[in-house]
Length: 305
Image 1 (cartoon, rainbow, N blue to C red):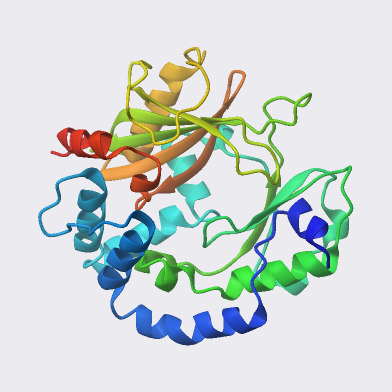
Image 2 (image 1 turned 90 degrees about the vertical axis):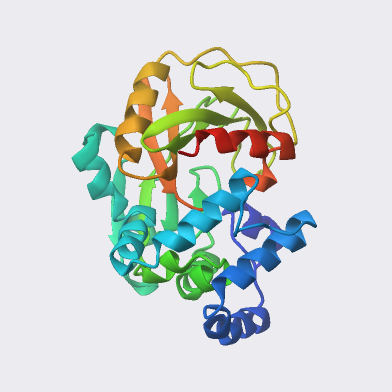
């Protein structure tokens, strides 16, 4: 398997040795998730995370999360809504099936996946992690052996324990295939991504991504308030010029509000392709310090009530 083929299907290439070590230490890391999360934060940011008395949004999100999952019922509920397959039922109940991506199939085992019957363009992913997806295109060769190897890796990878997010460990690993969405066929640009940060059922601001393409991590991002006004000094790597207000923005606000109702905090990700709104995912523990400036993170505590 060469590097080009790996990139074409957007695989995460972990060696068997590293994967074995991670699986061995995962049970021990799962016993101290708070400590592990604070260590991860320090490694990535070079700063100490204050969970006891948060002074910025990341600390508050993590503190609230660990309080919430003390209740086993709430941990299971967060797992259900983070599960990329199970959450579809929740979306149907709250806002309707029309907002979902087309589901081509789902499987419990890698051996059950029949790649030969999948459409020329589609997305294959697992339901219990982050970045565990591969984009299949009609004009790209399919290396079935490499794809099955990646899926086996993803299905057994202890993401919940290694990320210090215990609700992921309550998700039963599954594989699913969905329709392939595209914003601009001429440029191969993927759908614009609108990440609504919702507090107590109210979307307060949006992290907007554009410029995404298959197998490329280069994006342009900006933050807008709920009125679609750009927020200055909010992101670490500002994107392109200000984007016009989406034609379906009011409906997107309504959708995000309905999905986030009943939660102190959740990020609701939506796509807008013309007049079509598509649900992406719900995230309760985003690493916001990666995207946002320190000033914006501190100012965002005003949304916490």
